[in-house]
Length: 50
Image (cartoon, rainbow, N blue to C red; front, side, top):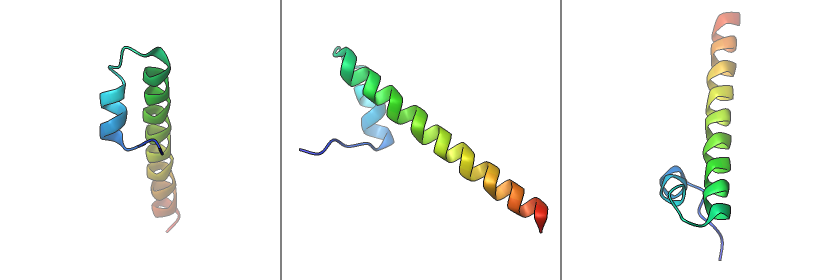
């Protein structure tokens, strides 16, 4: 079964007593934030160039 990697599932799994599950959830949250920040930075740089 494929694992859900949406933000709601990640935040729910973050409170899991299983350490591996909580670590995986934290990894997914950080990756999503990193991607979101990169997209925001890229859009800002493009707006600055135009």
